[in-house]
Length: 258
Image (cartoon, rainbow, N blue to C red):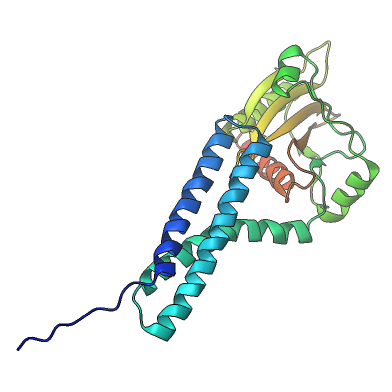
């Protein structure tokens, strides 16, 4: 006589934990894609991303509920619950990282290698249009002091090159950094100072930051100053400082080869 083996049913919470986790990842992907292609404005993209994070929290709660149910009743679905929890943690890891950055770094969104005389942005028609007819204002004294305390290593970039060679070098590095060049003016006999305006996107959402690069010759060297200003939010989470540091390192490395 054969025995009928009845398997324990799956935990409903475990099933829904994975489903909600998958849906949360899909919503987050949609938010990132729409933001990076410019299909929605930053507030809209953040609203969609916020909904995805709420779904991730729900997936985590459902996973925790499933673990309790499975422990008490012996139901199946531990793998599904672990999958839902993993997706929830994956979704919440980056916001947690940004929260740490928000606590450890100053609330600024404007960083420059020259705090006494920050590079200004070009006022040509195409430069203004690329910035949405907005021009970043002069950073406040509080912003300058906060940068001095947080990023003392951000200093003017000095290169042993002629002004026009330094201009071409800065332009090449900006393009290699995948920044969108919106306008550029080379140093000339009439205008001794060169300028480059560019736009860079943030790592995940692609939110724009406006960049101004100034190339100014001195007695024996050429000085390159760069300013990076985020358009979205009062806190840049260190993004502008990292961008400037990478640019300075790339300039120094490329200048050795000239």
